[in-house]
Length: 285
Image 1 (tube, rainbow, N blue to C red):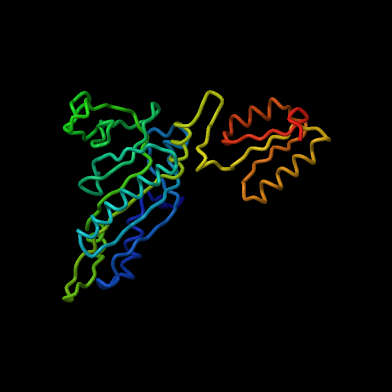
Image 2: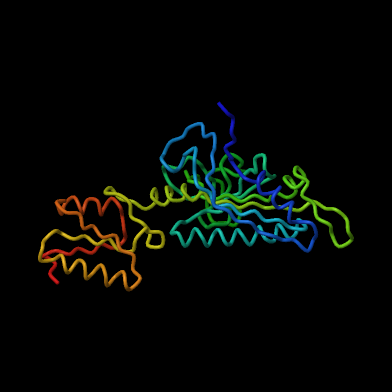
């Protein structure tokens, strides 16, 4: 019968901590990362990992002496996020959006998916994208750079960045002394990737009618080793597993006994490891 708080976001926790360490302009800039479980009062919790009330989040909070330095870092983080999502195998569209209670504007990273709950208006050539809720343009409107008509698409948001400026530093009294000894409010930015949601988004994009097809860069294993049970081939399977492991290749070895070959193959399709190795009498040595 006690009340307790579930954190939807953690500026309120990080800023008082930063205040203990930031006293002078010499202490800035600083960048604080965390990976933390978060909670949202999601009105329509559904779609598995995509719209959960509890989720895993990667946060970065940056603290700067002035707005110019914060905006410079904000632009750098845009490039970092584009690179991260590309490495994950996702074509994430950098999309301008409202900042809600946090800031004047923000940037979302949206992945086109017919099962997505967001919508964006965008130019396929990549020079314009806005969340449909705040868009200054509309579907079918000609791109200002002559790339043809703008499109509307359903999307999944996998990341979001905000130029917070002094919103939280003012609220929590996060000040520093500048070179002249005058107190000034630190400038902030925050940068988030929903790790568990990201996993769901990858599965929504990479699948077929049999199950998941993990991109190689994020697959939980490199190889799915399927052994079709037979005493003659047991040593081949063990030797193969040991060779691969010794070579630094991560192997999921299906050595279940009394499970049919068909069931093992079906599970292999469902799990979606990019490379399947089958050891059986048929495949030989």
